[in-house]
Figure 1 (cartoon, one colour):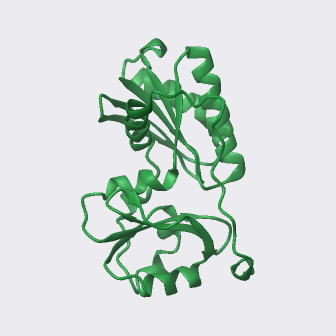
Figure 2: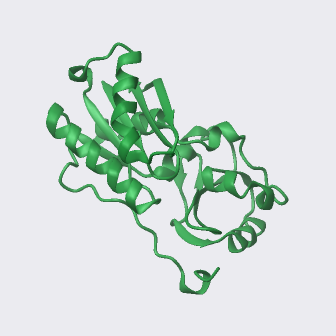
Length: 220
């Protein structure tokens, strides 16, 4: 199965391919013109560089966030439009799961950190690739306190961790910058795994994942 993955949760975007569970290719694009202008050309380039025709795509996987409201909506709209035009199913993948998957071989807990606005972030804890705490939105200061109190925390990962590296690496190991970038290929891989278990097309049910911000922590 050839799967196209779309990740537009945050500033930088990524599209990628997986085939039969293996990562095949990936293309990152900058946010200079926004995902609305860059996403479709990035998909066309990805397919062209890998000599894949549009009818060679069997499934589309789209990252659901949490993240930027506008960017997530663009990714979902493009993914759904292509799924209908190409007559293929589509599934959603939580953005945090894609980062956790990158380091699922580590023992101990992993904290996935995604950027929100200013000094606000989203985070959740994972063990291997299993989420063990709900995603929440908080300040970086509150995250630091949570990190200090979390036993067996091996790593923090994600674009939020990269943005606040200077604050976080004082108390915990931060993943290398390359691992903190979005990965459309990992989104594709996880989407293929999900579809293989359910065979359920989510075209009419996909919505972005939003996280309730705690009022006590929303003041910056």
